[in-house]
Image: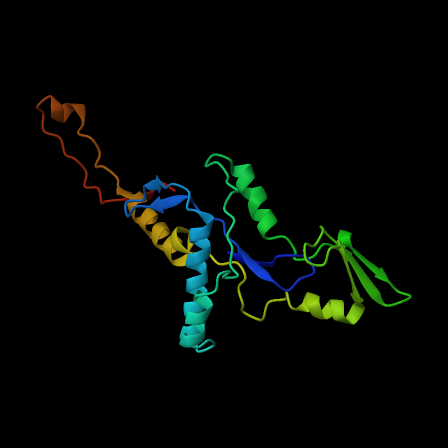
Length: 209
């Protein structure tokens, strides 16, 4: 998951989530599920965010109740982009898009004479224009808001891909790959009935990795 600006020159943030369209069973099997409606995702996310704010005493319970009664909740979800399971190149391309920089140097122009920055992007529905002009210092301030604090992680892995879950799977994989080598087979003389001594062999652990 990665928080990114909704528009290049705006402070409104949203989340990009790369998720499987299903769930893993305890035995590791994956079960695909029908697509979840975007409105249901938006409502679930809205309630989770408001509950988080109330829990951390940033928002009062009364205000949360009033906000939940709003006709327009202020949250939306778009889940129409999908990548096939066997499309590794598509997943890599989508992940690269999610991790892109919040602003593009190709869209930015600096006017040294006036000390202003001109940023061109797609047409903004509210401003009715496709550019933004502001002083250089103000632009730097806006840009610095996208720099994470020390030890702050912007990309998070949860569920099947979380660090803990991946570590547990790695441990299980190593333990299952360790097998005891079989003892040497009996010599032909022993199979024909003649006594033969079989040398003692200690168990040897072999990794298949």
